[in-house]
Each structure stands twice: as structure tokens, then as C-alpha cells.
Image 1: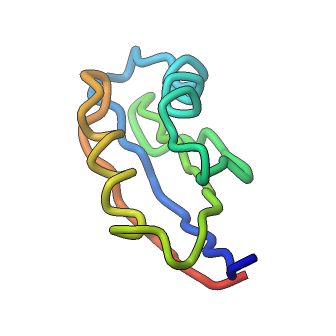
Image 2 (image 1 turned 120 degrees about the vertical axis):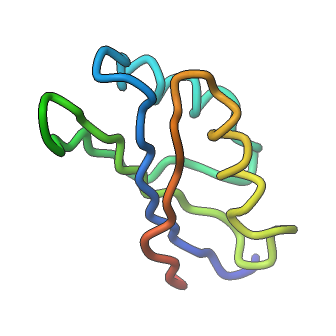
Length: 90
């Protein structure tokens, strides 16, 4: 079994009214089999806006790394953008 990578990312919603719990479910249902959500937080930013902070775990040798995951999440209508904050071997 290969080594794993932890990837922390911030998912910025397109609107203050976005249901981040529903967005989390949508993301989880669309992740590839070899990628899992280790933990998540919903964090306030400003003016009622909240972000979804995800910590994902995936194989180190995954084709394309986290880029395909970011691209998949950014295709959702309710997502403005995704920022990767930390990538670390675990």
C-alpha cells in the first residue's frame, strides 16, 4: 500500500445563502473512490459569508494530484472557487 497525502482546501461559495452542509454532501458523493474526506469545518469569513474547509486524504501517486478534485468542485454552480492551502504526506 502506497503513502497517503493530506490536502487542505477552502471552498468559497458563490452566495451567502449557499447551504454548505448540502454542498459537502454533493462533494462527498462525487469524489473518486480513492479520495476521502478526513474532516471538514464551516468557518465564518465576513458579512455572513462562510467557507467550507475540507481536509481530504488521497494516495500520494494519484494521477494529477489534487487538481482534478479542485476542477470537479469548481464546476458546481454554488462554488465560486477552491484554494489549496496545505499538502502534506501522512
